[in-house]
Length: 294
Image (cartoon, rainbow, N blue to C red):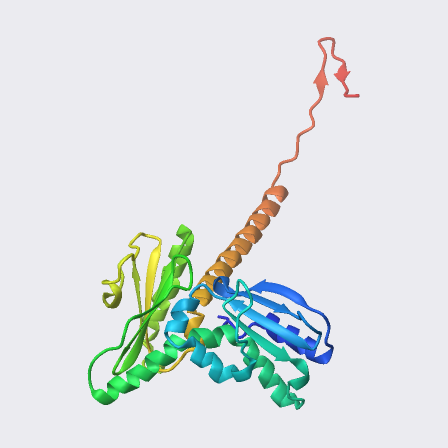
């Protein structure tokens, strides 16, 4: 299976190109989960403005997103965001480190803007978990991140772990079947001796997990699934789990369709080879003459 990258490839490639050859720029693009970006040069070619809009921005700010971004980007953050966007960064290409290693690290850091913003509630949960472990009891606040129209991430800290719950919608019946198979593999994987220490994964269809049953507005329809992770310190990969799951569902369906088309084509060849030849028979008139076609 393929692990999706945490950084945005368009930001990485564009920023790398502009560092080599500054030119005017005005590009808008969309990342996973409907996150919108805008890369432009509003004043001069050597000054890039990178803006991001994310649906759950207010919730992320509540859980410390601005503190994380200030820690990662410092003076690059703009005092006010571009209209219709939540946060903006001003990048002076002339001030970017010239050393290849430092330059590459800088580009990678900028391309992780979305990842770093979404990391805030996870970092808060892991910090709270350590505090609760020292105290010996209790549990942290249940944090809700509504990052898609009908889906959310729920995060809660306890003394020994952080619980992360994804609610996901399977819009198609076949997606629901594929998803159930994939998620059951996650559940069964811990039975293997080599990975018994892997984080626990639970899956439920329709019924929300106990940790969030008190939350209002939860859907309990057939197309809704809930995936629960017991995490100990991972952020980048867990953020992309929903996209990872649906990406592989689509890939599996595409593969099966291609195999079906190939099999149908092979059967068609067999049928074409088995087509019977039309027998040629003589037809005669009443007087005994042979009829011929013209």
